[in-house]
Length: 326
Length: 260
Image 1 (tube, each protein chain N blue to C red):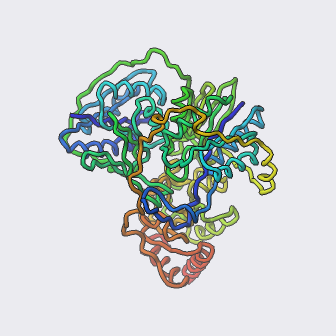
Image 2: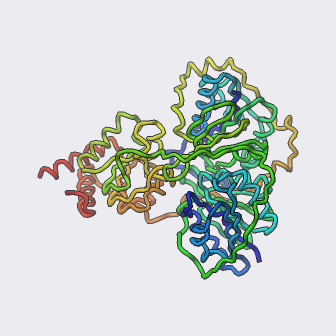
Image 3: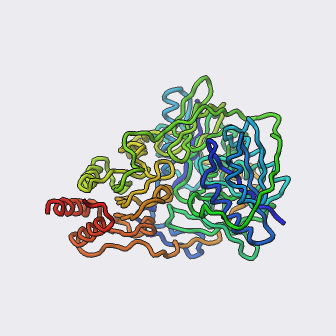
């Protein structure tokens, strides 16, 4: 019997969705009777988190200590490395989140294990572990295998697996004492800050006209604003527009911005990186306008217009205004 | 404040049809334009801003061949003081772990208070070289950094978390910070600027000079196969002339109940 470790991610007392998604995948792999699912939970006063996952794992290893109140990649790494040495899990799954992307590479070096990040699927082919990934902004897929090792680390992209419970499990709880005596590295948590506060709440909009890198120049954004105005919609955007300071952070759709659920989402010049699409889970209909027919956004959009946005947007706007008048 | 910045040259793949190579291990790159990885551009800028505020030096480092010097020259033109290229022959034989080993070994001999990498590289999207270096060098680290202040010899950093939240930390130096896009506004680099920067030091080191045993660099992560994304049903493409497209567009909006 071999264990599949899932490192539980939680924040401010809440279990993060990525945890449920990883537990689903681990549960699916553990339909093979030689595997069992072990959730590894580090934190302080974590009862609500334990409750949220107790029917999704065969075992929950809990290390509850004041020193684990805030996430610290270095402390996590030390403790998890110890647990790995003890339990020898075949696989350890970590979220490909801001925290997970810091923890996993450190843990891989410490444990001497191979690591593949940002995986979108995991398979065993003839007992060989294969991770599926994307490269070049999702334009290329790759299958990755690993040098032979006692264990493997994978970080899992958010949103690729269901959040549902899979199989019938009742977790055995294993409490562990905080094992570390001295902390070599010094990093102090200070506070959380809201980075996306503003006076427009795009998460409530029914119609969003969203602008991305394809707009080229800052002054061209007026084109999109005019279309939004004609449609009584709200303007939003993808990350590159915020990075360039062309629109404020609170208008950004995606992992690091807002999740939105409009009836219709019109994506103008947005290629469709997964970080952006992750914010669109609740969108009813997605209409993508992009001149690159291979842009990943056309894979998930419901309707597509493959055209130069500078030509087509004014036509769309005029048509809308004309119809409204008539 | 001495800062070492690790940079990478990557192909531009937006609005380009990518073709898988014969061995199915990568893509055909001979027709592609190459640029400084977007994240690294912000990392170089951030290092130069720190230097302008606190003094010190900025060293740009890359692992690659002669063509990759292009991103070092760009870094020098932006304001880096010197650049190092590590010649390793065929770079594709190393995985991120191997690259992190090489970069750590080079960084060890350089004076630094901070090491910057980009959060990710636009090509393989692994995003692990930086944190692996931090672990190999036994130094502090922060990921997805969107703000840095130096206070009393420590770094006050903001890390971007999911859902519009930032995490503020105080960390002792030396430290490795993985820089997120949007942290600053990278300066413009002119051709003249790059030409002027040709006078600055660009040192080439050979992998064999670093004394890393071969077996320590053998890849742990191996690309079996790359392929184009599996076909999905995909979007229904609105066809016809602009006027027809606009009519169809309007019909969809009306049907979905967002047209008054």
